[in-house]
Length: 141
Image (cartoon, rainbow, N blue to C red; front, side, top):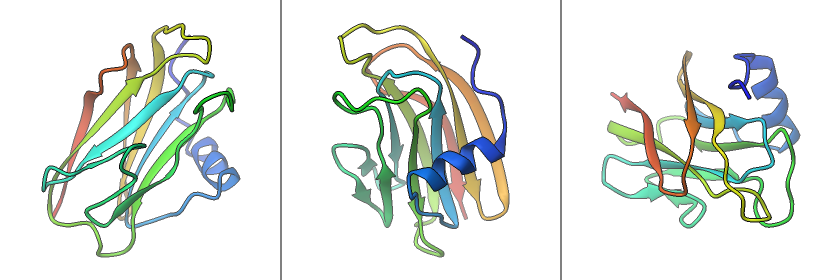
């Protein structure tokens, strides 16, 4: 299966559907599968935003999808910081693949979108294991 097409309108549609917050700094994970992919953002302080710790360094994971038996084929996950709330420094973005509800795990292509003010960067990759793997980094001045 190819990675999701880079269609910002599709990302925006999913964010709106899930009632996601918007922010000056925003990291979004999008994929096309019922697998449970997870988004992690490591803050400059070393604190980690994830499903297990949804709030750190002024940011929040406000959308976490495909958990347990509630699965959709067009999921999204979202971490955001309000205006001027993201501390300066370098952040790391990680993704893991916890597999399907039945325990199977297959490689899943994904798209990560990093929004810093008006600048948007997209990173494509494939999640293969439950171990979080760094897929991108960004710096907040």
